[in-house]
Amino acid sequence: MAKSMVLLLIMALSYFTSIANSQVKNIFLLAGQSNMSGLGGVVKNIWDGIVPPECSPNPAILKLDANLQWVKATEPLHADIDVNVTCGIGPGMPFANSLLNKTSCFGIVGLVPCAMAGNKISEWQKGTFLYNQLVMRAKASTMQEYGIIRGMLWYQGESDTMSQSDANSYKEKMQQFFTDLRNDVGIPELLIIQVALASGGKHYTEIIREAQLNPGIANVVTVDAKGLQLQKDNLHLTASSQVLLGQMMVDAFLETILTTTSSINC
Image 1: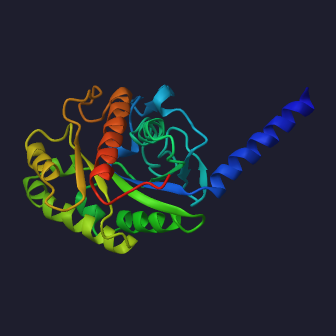
Image 2: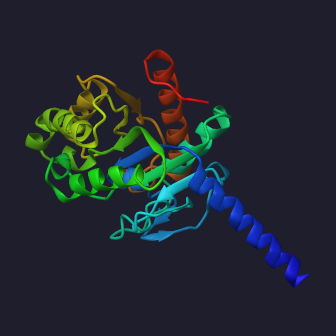
Image 3: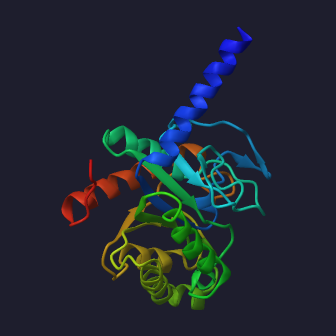
């Protein structure tokens, strides 16, 4: 019995390794602040450990870990990237699972976590730590094995709602960030699926939302999170809301690639 179990484990490992290393990876960058890194199920800095079925591991879903290695993706997806907070459920895994469920020919999904809690849009400008890390990880994701960056999932802005000057300058900085990123990763028309805020400071949230809902830059699609359930802190999405958000982002992605020159080779 013990020998058969070992043999099965070896066969499973061999199967997973072949999937991880031999097929085209359809890569998605995940960037922003805490609602992207995911605090679903986290209360008082403790994650409840509950993984919704829509966030379950799948041999066809990989992530680029902190050591720039492709590994099997599991929740919490950002645990080794956003190390200064307790991460839980975010939109990345439900996005990947929903995408595979809706596109049977899609192949391997490669997720590149880059989000960190508590940052302003100014901290994502060209030359900053967060920006440089994002560009570095994006480039690394396509170097080891054949992969194509299909888009970036972006959820950020809560930290910019507390100050009128931050809110008023948000749109220009957002546009500059998207433009610089596209130039530096060498994808001039990189698809960006961003989230319009569900929460934030009580005074200037609507200014940020207006910028996100009307980005004024090509190939940026906005998914509106307003109305999704928040945790008791009135800031972070619940785990079930993160699942819904991931699925909404998939719908936006699929709708976009059907109406643009982007395509998926099956």
